[in-house]
Length: 354
Image 1: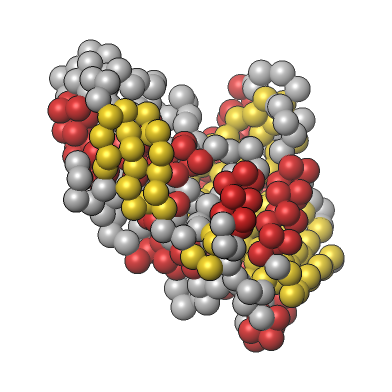
Image 2: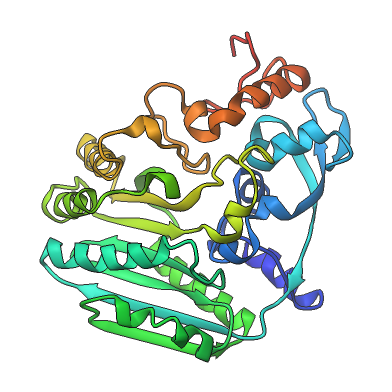
């Protein structure tokens, strides 16, 4: 993403919604979702695709848009890897924000209850649908800490009017940097992400999409913190990413694109990192945490296709695309009946044996 962002900046100080990892490529990112700190304000990367040139399974090259090959264009935005090779994109872009506020707060404690109380306050604030869409945040739950960081796209006075910091109990460290330029904000973000994720590591990731209609109870939050802080993780280190969405992401209907997560409040994703291949203990630690958070009802929740997980029981495709799967399978059967663009958990043609 870092190269794409620099190109947009150089072309008249433009930007678009995207993620925060400097090493993720635009092709997979934009066709699976394209979520990031800008999504509450602008939507997802796939929401701002206006057209794409794509190589289909029979070798033909077509331009897709809402008026040209609309079925492929629909499928491309959420399940692109199953339908073709994208040669080029056209995106809607926006003027860069004039002023950005970065913030980071840490709550440190050996007491799971204190960490849980801080997170519950954060959760109450950030799942309020009236929250200013210029506000975006990520909570990182780790051993003995909750780190809350994010960005406000606007002036410091507007950020302070939210009184966000004052409503989180137990903060032990705080850092606010106001008046940043857009590129100053992105460079800080990339540096922060690079320090969290080493270039290479073994890890197991387990995620769940949390909708406004299926928010966890306070009891589930308390129980998951007790599990996280007290159980054997089977890993060198672990952390939970709670990526806040809502806002403009929710303004699009769930069947407008193949991306189904339009009731989305946030993703809850646990990463367990190990020195070598991940262990059964690490798998069970992560799986149990997510199951607790889901209130023991995993069937109610979808998962993000960007977090492919071979341990998903039943239909992974149903978890990734929900009610959009039937239309995806129909389009796949027409345009790629032999499953040329095949992945283990990708969209499959109807009646296929691939």
